[in-house]
Amino acid sequence: MAEFPQMFRVRQRFEGPELAEVAAVVESELSGLALSGRVRPGQTVAITAGSRGIANIGSILQAAVRHFRQLGASPFIVPAMGSHGGATARGQRNILESYGITEAFCGCPIRSSMDTVVVCRASEGFPVHFDKQAYQADHVVVCNRVKPHTLFTGEVESGLMKMMLIGLGKHDGARVYHRAIKDFSFGQIVASVAREVLSKCSILAGLAVVENSYGRTAGIRALGPEALLEGEKALLREARRWMPRLPFQAADILLVDEIGKNISGSGLDLNVVGRKHLWHSPAEHEVPKIRLIGIRDLSRLTHGSAVGIGTVEFCRRRALDKMDVGMTRVNALTGGFSMEAMIPLDYPTDREMLQVMLTQIGLTEPPDARLLWIRNTMALAEVECSAAYLEGARGRQDLDILCDSRPLPFNAEGNLDDHHMQPGSRRPVAARSGS
Image (cartoon, rainbow, N blue to C red):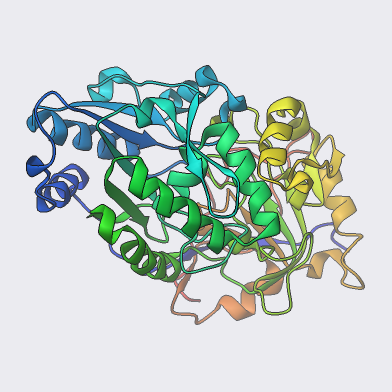
């Protein structure tokens, strides 16, 4: 009997638009707000940049900077990422630079600081923090991707409103807001803090980005401060519709090449893996239903932050070797979810990890296991699937079967190829589509 299931690859056919000229759309959207009537020559404009891996973010920020320079203003970029980057100014600047967000590329200064101003106290009694550099600017433009939050649910989740709280609140603000969420609710704290920030912190506009299922830019909207809330609600509905998904709604094992803060605030998107509401298992209403998750590595762009590693059961040891324990704990504790920094069972090789995982899936024999293998929870266009899925994949109009079933490609050391799930990776000759 085979030790591991045979695997085949599928390509998913996702729906959703894609913008061809990102910079032109940014210019058109900002021009539509007619900001020249509010922004005078020489005034400063702080533009936020976060820690997520947003498609085309460098070009989006560059185009925004260009727009305000054309108005005669002096724009600059502010890292807005709560406690990420080890809660240090240098660490947050390094994250931006790793995305290509540099002063030379964007054409303006980057002012990174962890200092905040307490602008008031919220009605719930806690202080409202705001990045000092942004607070001292004449205007603030909040730029972020709008998408479903990995832990919270509501009409507003992860986007512009959250950036005004957690991102621009820096470490001090993120820490107090996450504490407040435990006593109240995510929705209430977002509404309460956003109301104060909008009235006291010179918010000029929001620049919202929505991505399609392939992780590419699907839409960009510029919103005036009075339209931020309702505009974000509408964009979140679009983002939910275009969110990438696994090709099947149940699995014994999900193997993930990498997790990281550039991929998701929780390292891996809990919306995708079905663990948004409970730790280590799906809630009754959630899909997919995945028994066990194993991760192989941390992403390069996470800079040692392994937040989210505690949401999985197994990992390859090198992920722990690359983990910056201090940074990971600061980020997890700031967010109020210490479980995200806890350590799963670790093994030196992929073969050993999978061998153990296959003993923990009940009575199903290893060759019949439902195993899915992905690069990360943003890159789901192509997925490796075990032979147990083959019959169900045949004839599905949203799937192309790319190759016949074959063994997992372990090398002599018992590890899988780190580039196997990369775009354009080598694989056997494709089978007929849908056959």
